[in-house]
Length: 279
Image (cartoon, rainbow, N blue to C red; front, side):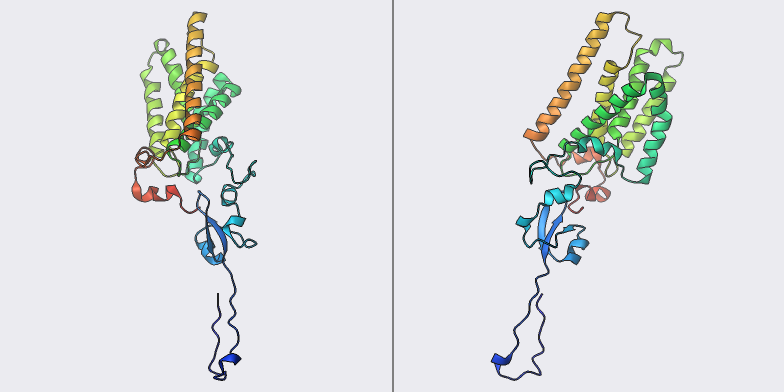
């Protein structure tokens, strides 16, 4: 910034004019989830909701990706490697209402299943399904932000649905619990249409949860050990195949799908901020 001098009181002799004083107040400012860097003032950086680096002078002197990502530092500078975010995102919520939905779900739906099958089995399904769901969300919606345990929640419903199918003949009115599960699925998929909650995560979580239920849950309906072994082997193969496919596609075949957002958030006006050019 250059301060304008008052020359009205100075002689017409140009040699007597004071030197113009300019102060450089622009510094690197990291904006957006992609680590974009611009040179701007502190106030403008704050308006853009960016991260201002007061001690640096050039964008080449800062690591915007690290600044934006936060948490643990990269093992290799300027190379994002925070794989653990696929897991930690399960415990982050988009707001108070989203958190309230999770608490109600865990208390009314997940708690009885945990009493029935044990906390270890339910934990395995909850964490693994949420991880795979977050991975699917990152693959199909690369520039969007997704939070919450949507994939884990639908995995729990998949366990209920699987157990219901296996014990269908032993129930007097199996359509009643089936209808309740369908209503819960519909409500959660409807929530998945809102910003920051992703239906890709929920659908892949449902698939993995259904497969893991066959693997880790004890099943008294299989009378023959051979049949049980076939079901467990097939489910395990599908789970591993889905996981490896998502990993390979995410790291080796990056792509952008504009129409993919319609399945997760079709409302253009309220979903426009989901791409998050600004943090």
